[in-house]
Image 1 (tube, rainbow, N blue to C red):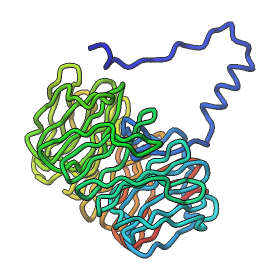
Image 2 (image 1 turned 120 degrees about the vertical axis):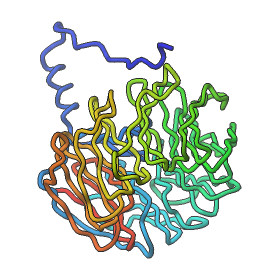
Image 3 (image 1 turned 180 degrees about the vertical axis):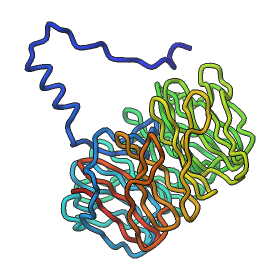
Image 4 (image 1 turned 60 degrees about the vertical axis):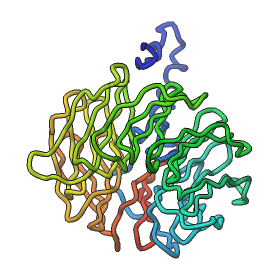
Length: 377
């Protein structure tokens, strides 16, 4: 199963001209970039590609007409976010001014926009999946599922993937909306599918973690979770990390097709709804026990925990050695990745169950009173 091995690019040749090396380093250090999909990458790692200003300062806020529980996408200077007011918004990242508003068929709750090749994809609670022109805000096509869509879309090539409460994982043509295949599970598919090396991974309300061939829609293997999962799996280095409503966090070895370790807090038995962020050594996620947990990636041992004043359903974002996460206590927290120390926070006017997104020197998060906040310098 060597297809699960992490592929490292070869080192730069010493024979390369010095200006090429310097140019490459400048690109790597660039503060630009996009956050085009839920959790920032197809593998749902929750890692920002570039750093953020320190300290963060509120740049602007935007008021929607209802709750924002959808996590934003940030692409080419535009923020895309859904709202329970049955709208998908495009907002200028620099100014906070609305560029356009698209009317969805129903409220957009937790489905977070995915932006790819000039189209914005999002699902709504009426079961309609939308492809919207990113420049104009006009519908390109729609697809009707048989149940509400809380799953965020993900993609490979010209295919887009999402789950529905009709118990299906869907694969559509990204350009036309044609159904290519669907895989039927034994419960609602709430999670966002994670994608790595041509395989789609879903964790479902049927208490099962599944690996599905992205091209054919055929199941490759399944692992029992022991409880249903609302969180999405983060994939890194041949392992998947996911919290469950059985009050556990599991690391699944994708090559061995089994759980490698299991974490459960010794005294606080609450579900994990937050999706994990994963670095080379740590796994960070929030819990309904009002805490943010940091675990050692290879063993599952707790390194630190941080207490908030309410349940943590927001999924963390890691930028360098800084962790950003919202809480239903109405605060956005910045924690030190190494120690878990609270280094900065911002008080919003309502619970922050949405997850932060970061790109282009900016961090964006929505709140349940319909305010979208943008932080930068």
